[in-house]
Image 1 (cartoon, rainbow, N blue to C red):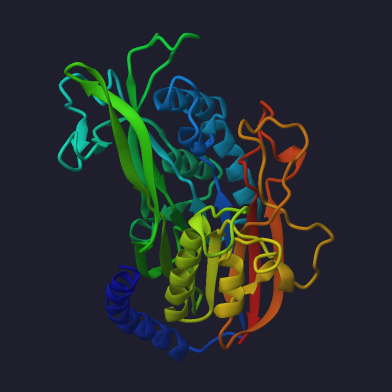
Image 2: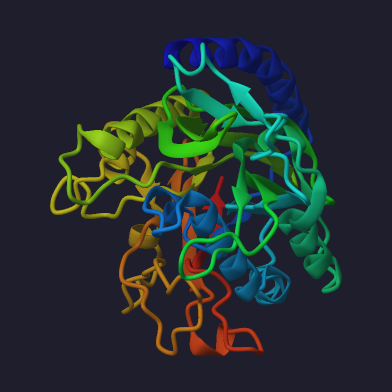
Length: 416
């Protein structure tokens, strides 16, 4: 499946590149200046709660975990955090921004997921012999659109960006009932269906031309199977909720003055620091990193790859999560943090603050949000990179960190 996706994407890319090279040749005919510059940033803006709560639910089951998660998402207040993230972006004014965990949260009240008539359930086999099912994606009342909230916060600062639709893949899209219970696990609320749509988004400054944009899901993703219960004629019936936590990538080619650049944005699978590189979620991350490296290698240079890769520079040494090692050692991508002109004394940590974002002192202790580059024929003249949103002064008025991740911004200047 991964090879099929790459072949389909490669054929589409060939057609797009014919136009791209025509644009580049036209720019060259007008005479190139000696300098070229691009400013890029990456930011995981954070859903606002730990999605993995649903995999280890409390005593009253997964609906209670979803209810708890939704409460925490409201407490971590993305509209307020978006103002702080917009402040960080305004300080850098990047040409291109790669965003991860750009959630769209919709609800349905009362929910139909657990309706006795089964109207909110889609069976994937012959039930009950095959107990697999999924909940229908029919919640439509928008509660939080992280993309629009952030775009509005940027526009209020005079910063106008375009979310590139064909380079901003939809990842997970899932719906589940949320129920509040008392101490004896008796329901004390009518079920509300919560639908979470996870997106990675590429923002490009509105005045810049985008020559092409592409996106795709990775060929290999993490399957999800949650034992639960659904209503039956004689009472609750054991069943297995099945979905897939899809991840993907988006790519654009953007022209700044007369120089074109390829930019790729992604959010790789989380991996597992307790397992070898070729097992469990690490194996999923390995496959995604290989696919990402192949996609990036097809794009014209200079190319920049940004995102939350869930793997540190210790990959291949003490960190068994393989993505960083694959992207740097197999595909030769350069980590701009390590090659900047004046390496900072700090370690550049980007992960992670507490789930509720109200920890007083920063708890960032690893660097998994990265900007890679392949300069091609251009000679880097100056590289300046810094972490965003990691200082106490960056917090919101109510004392929240902008995200559980810090962002990263870089300015690349070239001789041509």
